Amino acid sequence: MENGSLMARVGAWLQSWGAATVMSPGGGEGPVTFPDGRSPEVILVDDAAFDACSPKDFERLCSGGGSILVVAGGPAGDGLPRKVAACQMETLTAPIGPYRLHDWLVRLLEGGGPAAQIAEERGGQEEPAPRRVLVADDNPVNRKVAALMLRQMGCHVEEAADGSEALSKLEREPFDVVLMDVHMPKMDGLEACRRIRADRRYGDPRVLAMTALTLRQDLQRCQEVGMDGYISKPLERKDLEATLCQRRDGSFRQPGDEQESGKDQLIDEERLDVLRKVGGDGLVANMARLFVEHARKNREALERAVQEKDWNGIREAAHALKGSALNLGLARLGAVARRLEELAIRMEGDDSVESIEKGTALAGSVGRELDAAFTALRSLQAKE
Image (cartoon, rainbow, N blue to C red; front, side):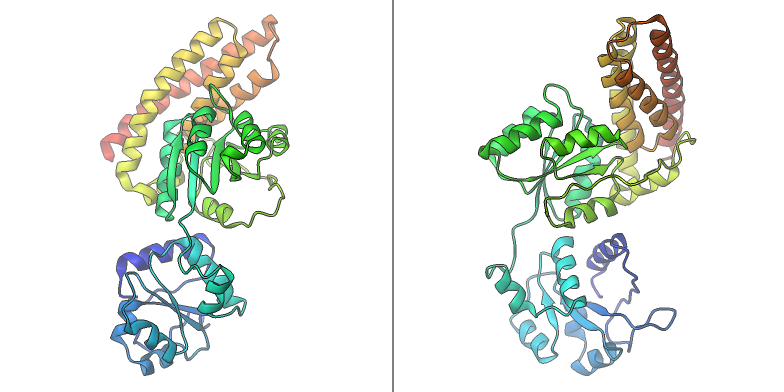
């Protein structure tokens, strides 16, 4: 590929799908092979490289027998379709998004029909409408990360801070997918989904619960209200793309034996690397600032709930801290906040001295981890 920006985007999508890739900056240098000598099954060539090379160059390029897909990063010129047809290749025209590319690659690898056949199966629409996604989460850090990932994937994204706001947006405009946090103030994700399924005004979007390795019984409740599946927090782009590419078949994706990574670390560097790939160092610094701002408010809410022996308030504050912490890679804080949240769920309505002492002690641990996190983030912001 000659177009470096297009090459970077396509390369990131392919890697997120687990595809073995080899990148070449130009198309006329002879057969392309992997380091182990294998020939590629599909060769992606951008229109700039295609225009710069003769048909004989591409005959050499595909001498290993792989299918060639010409990816037009801009509006295709009048001569491009004729040149592609003459070389018996396929063309994917701009705008290029991960879903269209994924669909075409599957067709090519499975021996599917040419472009005309694919267009006919889609009702003659050469360019389907962009995937529209609504992100509903009361945590601004979580919303920001999800929205950035989705926009980089070519999605149109809107945001909502609670279930009620999500319903208002669904009533005004259609969405293909709703990423729904389960625990939100005013109206939680379960009630919001229940209303979506009961009222045609909200359309028929796929509703996916966003969870932070939640309890299995919570996922059962998600299924009961009509959700289509779940995606684990903190979000990973490869998981997000894979989930959105799944066909809607009426089944509910159940959790596997997922494990927390880096839970003994103050800061999980692998998570920070994920965030840097999404938005660079600036995103990490901005998220750190947002985290500190909202964590202070959540800490005050937690301390107030402990004093009032309010298990529901403790659960809500711990849940908010857990989500923000895990998204930013604050692994130890996320782990202890999760333990407090789960304790609050189990102890709801239990006012015994022993239970209150357990909650107070665990809330104290959350406070100490918060102090350590604030110190670490100040150091991180100075470096970023």
